[in-house]
Amino acid sequence: MTTSTAESSAPSPAVPEDRAAPATPRATGVAAALRRRLHPDPTVRRLAGITLVNTVGNGLSLSVAVLFFTRVLGLSAAQLGLGMTAAGLCGVVASVPAGRAADRWGARRVLVVLVSVQAIGTAGYALVHSYPAFVALACLVSAVDRGSAATRNALYAEVLPADRRVAGRAHLRVVTNVGICLGTAVGAIALQVDTRPVYLTAILADAASFVAVAVLFHRLDIPQRPSVTGASAPSGSGAAVCEPSEPSESGAPASEPSAQTGVANPSDPSGRGVKQGRRPNPALRDGPFLAVTVLNALLCLQFAVLEVGVPLWIVQETDAPRITVAGTLIVNTLLVITLQVRATRGTEERTGAARACGRAGVVLAASCLVVSLAHGLPAVVAAVVVLGGVALQSLGEVAAQAGGWALSYDLAGERDHGAYQGVFNAGTAAALMAGPALVGALVIGYGMVGWVVLGAVLAAAGLAMRPAVRWAGRREASPGAV
Image (tube, rainbow, N blue to C red; front, side, top):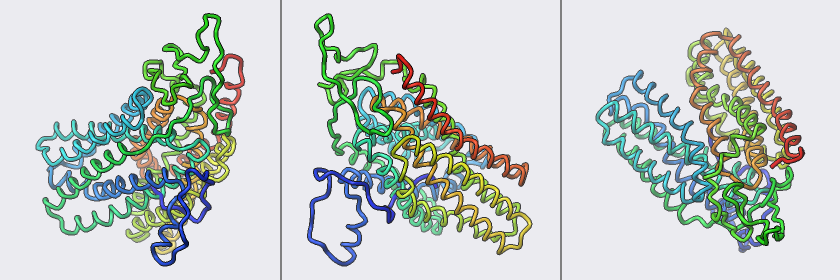
């Protein structure tokens, strides 16, 4: 699964007293059990509630989308595939400008607009009566979807302290998987009823969830923190450094914002005194960050392995029962829910995050090899082998996600979160778009050799993270580095 969140048994990160939930008498029963599962940080709790609403709607929509488009809108499989490919490309392109917009106008404001457009676009599917209209609307919805994903990641950097962002995102990912599971369960009812009104209701319910999410984001408090004035904080420090203002030779404070440099003014905590979106995109000129983005995108091919490669392999190349396909999704979801928060341990330093990505690449490669061995085995044995491979894939997934999140924030420093998250999200979107075709071609076209090649790519991407991070360190230490 590409998303998820309920808190695991791992201890929650420390929360300062002023951000922790107020102490209450210890209660018993179901309410007390649920309360203990809540995150101690009130901001993360609010974000988790927003995420749950959003992902329940997404799970409902995803479960009925294919049948809605083919049976209600009357699209052929070829038309649907072409339209979704075009939509995926629009999503890749939209991530970068959405991130820049977040830097210029504020992540929350941009996110509310994007989610509102997504609500209108999703509801618009009910009015589509031609293929060109479907393609245009799918491109719009995909663009605002990927743009909102990049903007959300920038928003997390604004509302969560640096030392708790990765753990907070892990918690939200667990919630995401829980929400998608709940939405999919409701969608299963719609699939069973199998009527046009029910499919339309499911799509409109998803649109309504976006309206609710837009309102909740609009009401989310944005804490005011001083902006940095110079280079990024040292690796792993998680702190934004504000230097005292020194008068320049002209008599103006040295920390005065500059339209050319985009350096924020510490007296303007929101950072809105600088039109950061007008500067050249710093993320596109950051070689080490671009390298990490590409390597992370290669690691994200793992999602296509789970969603496309494994099901095709089970059905076409093994004797495992077809119900094994559902079993792989259940195994993956349960392991991600259980382990994602715990997987963030050790990623506080960028070197630890890079090591996590390296381990993830090796484990993902091993999972490819294990799945490939199911070919030619008896049905029950093949099913066990495939499920074992998916379990390994899930272990690699949680480590890769934790390491990737940490590096995307750490290498960006404490400025231009929108720009950096927009570029990073564009890499992920590109992998999600190209992954199904690439993985399908390797697995079905070349069999076990294809699995070996795919595993080698994943291992190489993970292991290359450490050299990329060392490059970033050398670049920051070089004279004149910004």
